[in-house]
Length: 316
Image 1: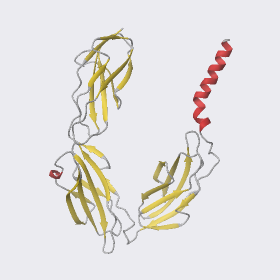
Image 2: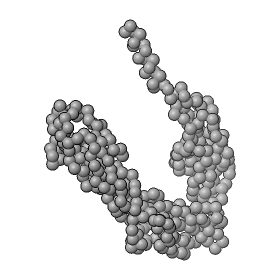
Image 3: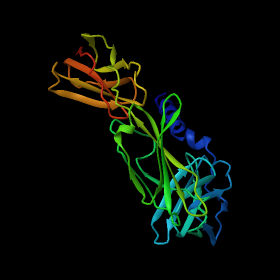
Image 4: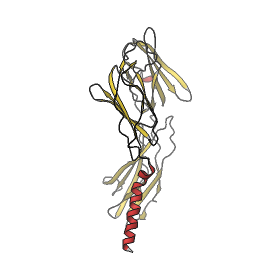
């Protein structure tokens, strides 16, 4: 009977570890067929759309773009069979492979191609540098930067406030450099601010490239502790639960909670501290005694709430 039980345990363990392998299709002997760019192509402008045929059994595709000096321009995992990016004028190679949870194909044979500057800006893009896209912040950096675009003679800048509609709050044209500093007073309230750049020359212009910055200066509400109850007597493994109140600000972002557990009520001796995006965390105490716990909420703009009230528990 003992031998039978051990055999069953081994089978169950094998099934649990190999379930994903069994469900995934073996694509290791397949190949991804490249569509564009093909060998020797020269692309006018800085915008390149890479494409390849879908491969049955592949969940994702890893695309690599390599510069002429053999350094990586890009190494990205995508879930569709296209990727559009911007490249400086030069010579490149690219390759792609299919992947799923358990298997991957070989990379396709490297394809050589090049990009060259074009006087026609219509199908090109301005590459924005800073601030980063979808940045949540409580302090706006008013310096905006972007890459210079070959054959562009000037740039137009727009700043749009998005809050119950969109309002253009600033515009400037005929900018000769690739950066602009604007007045901090333009960011007069918490909101999403969209900054846009387009490049121009005498005969053509790009579409606007844009990014969003979220100004958020309102701290999250104080968390409310749920369980265990104050002065609860418990075992060494404890699940802590709490709730976060509704954010009253114009901008809401992801909340990260910090739990602190201490052996004294003043939290001079913190025995455990951890961050979580959940409202529940489990912790195993290694020693018995009386402990104290509290929660603090921090949003994506680094605004911090007040600590929750402190609760105690007795670990036996």
